[in-house]
Amino acid sequence: MILTFDFSSPVPIYLQIRNQIVIGIAEKKLMPGEKLPTIRALAEESGINMMTVSKAYQLLKQEGYIITDRRSGAVVADSGKASVRPESLDALRLYISELRLSGMSREEILALCARLYEEGEKK
Image 1 (cartoon, helix red, strand yellow):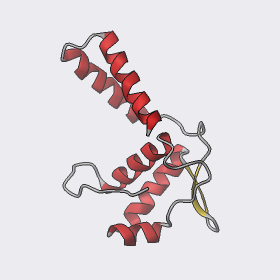
Image 2 (cartoon, one colour):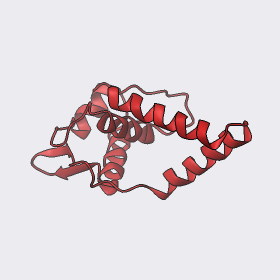
Image 3 (cartoon, helix red, strand yellow):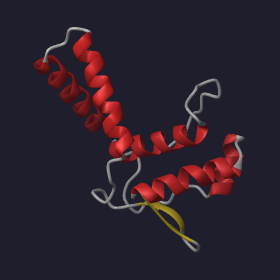
Image 4 (cartoon, helix red, strand yellow):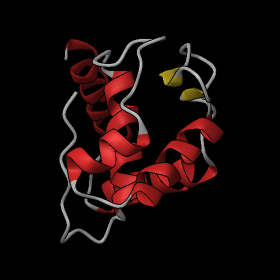
């Protein structure tokens, strides 16, 4: 899986790393037990600071998406062990509110969510 970064984005780089890995796991581009690059390797390959990568990996570990071990490094955790962050629920609530205010009905919002969910399954 290749990570891409938008250095002009207001989203911090560590969150860009986190988000892309979470999407990769959800879309089965990264499978449970699959080894991730070391912090050093990812930092050097991407041209970003090792502390930034470390912060992303720490967040992913805390959320249950990866498991880290000093000897084997970081690996993708078994699915179903991750927890939903309260910030994710707050963001979803905001997006649903924006869609409502744009005039979308409940059925249209649910259909949109279903389509996006299915797109993620196909990748």
